[in-house]
Length: 255
Image (cartoon, rainbow, N blue to C red; front, side, top):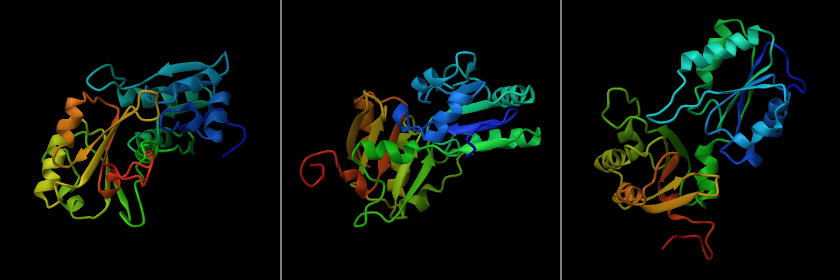
């Protein structure tokens, strides 16, 4: 990554999973140098205090079933500000290229002839389970993991996820944006052959002081999460590793 940002360039900065201490050094440097920062509600908002006093900040977040800045308008703002000769940072939570629409923004800029730099971020898909004491891989339990979006349920025409294949994969399954459809997801996995007794954990408000973990199995995790009044943002981990709690004393296995 360049030490000095170039005017007229859009920089896609992955801000990490929410804790301002978990943004990268390069990402923080970019925010400090930016003329304009477009940010989401899940970005590490405290980092905005590091902006220059004369820099412009633009909120473009999307609230589930609430206020929303259309992606097309976000693309337009990025291009407009860059064409005006300004250094533009697009600050998102996690990593821009992991369900962050960073690919769409990079394509839009490229089509407009606007240069794009990328500063990767720590993805919440790995960081949030880790902070909850759940490793997504473990040599004796899981040799891989799959990260999927649960924003549409299994069977929905918009879904491209092969849930039946994931049920047989033997890998850890990390579901982002899946709170609303968690029950349907678990039913689809069980009907496709995943043992209903497979451990599962939902981590809500990861990387924040209000972070909490709901633990159960594929059979009951949706009910337990609902009873606990879990709301987005939350990440679900399904697989043997979800039976671990490495933050607990002893061997780390949950009772």
